[in-house]
Image 1 (cartoon, rainbow, N blue to C red):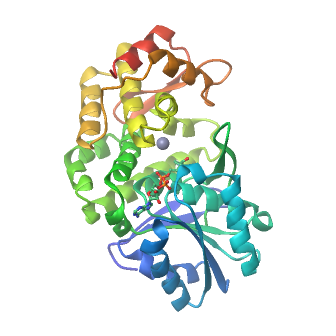
Image 2 (cartoon, protein in one colour):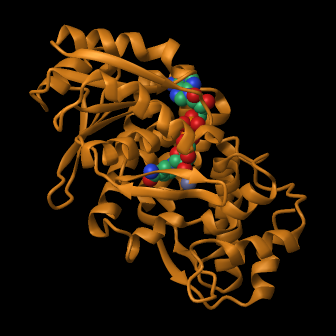
Image 3 (cartoon, rainbow, N blue to C red):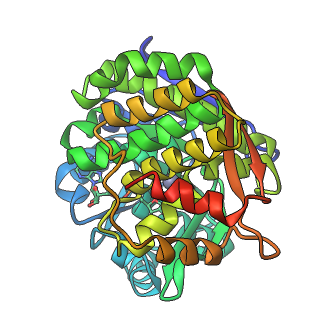
Length: 363
Ligand SMILES: NC(=O)c1ccc[n+]([C@@H]2O[C@H](COP(=O)([O-])OP(=O)(O)OC[C@H]3O[C@@H](n4cnc5c(N)ncnc54)[C@H](O)[C@@H]3O)[C@@H](O)[C@H]2O)c1
Ligand SMILES: [Zn+2]
């Protein structure tokens, strides 16, 4: 393997796998997959944006390694992450003649990853799947941890399963075609990871975030490898989200409310960025974190090109939405709050006035 390849092992009992990060990996996916399976076939699932960019390169590499391939394409976008589209994946893939060893390859962002993972969890009661994420968000977040699923009219990700991938292959070169707003969305999750677990990494991110914005692939490869390692360590300690895995929801209690009330005008990453700021300010109001640390958080979010203020959504609607958040347990809203850069704690005893003040600080 070339020396600039970075590998992160995810050690989940019974489901050990490797995440490989290497520029150019897409055109070398065939030999990687060959080392993982004896299957003669491989089915690629991708979306209508990614298919014309990368599906032929992936298929050619797989075929040169002896795989017979089929590519199923679904329409791009979260609005298609539903039962109807899932059904079209089954319809396209099942006639290809699958057996229990045939791998499904998810080539695309988090929508393709979640849907392909769920298809793989359910076809023949579970076949292997490989994540080949092509958005920064899918690389650093959605492809790690085994959560798969689809949305329902009543809410996001309501139908799904835990199904760990056989491997994750990440080619950071694919980020060169990613729309800038999607790149920034992924940066919000990177910022989140560093605040919850990694103070030295946060300082490095402060110094280098301009390189991420400029699509410096060498830097992005480091950033992705570092972030998948952070998420992998969190998930390994709590694969089914019974305790500390909830730290990954930092910024998301406020964030989901902003996303929903804005009717998705704010992207997920933009919402999470504002949510991180609200949660950090709330922690400062509770004297849990020093105000200069909060300033650093706001500054790095601004440097990533993400919003830090200007929220005009009705505060009452945001507060009402938060109370309905699925992470609310026994009637109390749970907040992940930073105690310093690099560590967080969970609180479910926050006074409503403080929640309101935190939201109002985003105006
Ligand atoms: N399973 C998990 O643990 C987990 C974690 C976080 C998010 N998610 C899910 O991930 C989804 C969001 O993922 P996303 O942000 O990747 O969205 P996405 O999959 O919709 O991708 C965003 C857009 O970028 C396009 N695209 C993808 N790669 C590209 C490339 N290299 N060049 C050009 N365009 C490209 C896609 O076609 C799409 O239009 C949500 O459904 C969310 O629920 C899952
Ligand atoms: Zn998120």
